[in-house]
Length: 445
Image (cartoon, rainbow, N blue to C red):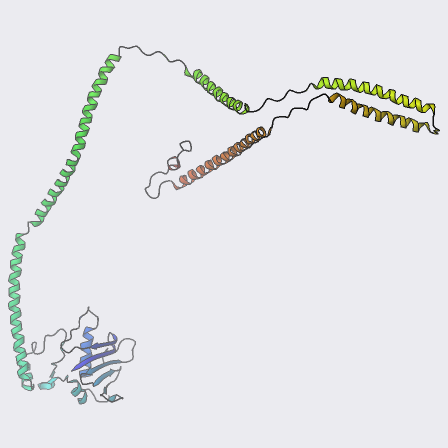
């Protein structure tokens, strides 16, 4: 009994190993997947056929190997011009080679495989193990004479006859089942003929569903229509009321022309500006009201006149004193060789006396005067003025920044408008791209 099949470079099989089960093994798969090649491999190892295209494309030899249930392994190797067998028995390490055996399969190989064909008269034989794909089971497509020869030459004729009888019984059972199934199909066909009107019924049912959906939509729209009718009635009654009022007002004269409001608006604007200026002045007055009044200044003109008169008196007195000293020195004159030195001394004495007299006279004149009053602390006022200057400078800087931002905004809008003009339409919806709608108006913000 075959336990395992190994194929290498045989037809469509590059290297395939199939392990058979203890009972029946069924091979399934799509067309051209190599199922028939496995049956052909069994036929090749059993009959050693003439060289055909058994070798896989690109390979030099094909190998079909079978492993039997007793451990014996048999291999059939096919080259382009020759073929041979190899046998590996349990416990041995080297393969036993069978070559140069002619056309017939060696008897030792047939005894191991037990796939012998049954010989018939006339040199023919019948394969009872491997069948053709498109032919029925053996003997069913053969004449009765061939079947008689087979049964006469077979030692298991009774078993084969029993198998043939069982097959015939199965065929009769299959025919009865086919007839029964045909009757069932006829009954089903009659039922289907009675259901031919179902598509029309389904179509009518679909139409009814559509009508129902439409009615449901109309039911939802009825309250809206009723609301519109009520609104129409209200507007009609309001129209009648307005018509009556129009009839009553038709007898009235036209209203007189209004006074030109332009000058009045300008006057109001001027008054508003004056009011704001008054508020600013009032705030400044409230801020300056906390300051003390400046002290009265001393009458400087009178002081200067008194100083001048005092200087004159002091100068005259000083001249008299100098003259007296000079006269005293003349009573005992020193021996002076150079008169220019004497004149220099006299002039220096006169100058020093004049300066001293002026200082003394000024101190005497200022002595009765009181100390000048302390001036109000101007630091808060100066701080306020500095703050106002800082605020003014900050306002100027802010105005400059605002101008720059407005200019940048104008340039950016111009760039957006140019880019939108290049694009033309929206690539998503195909609508027209309007810069004013896209970015808005700066005055609206």
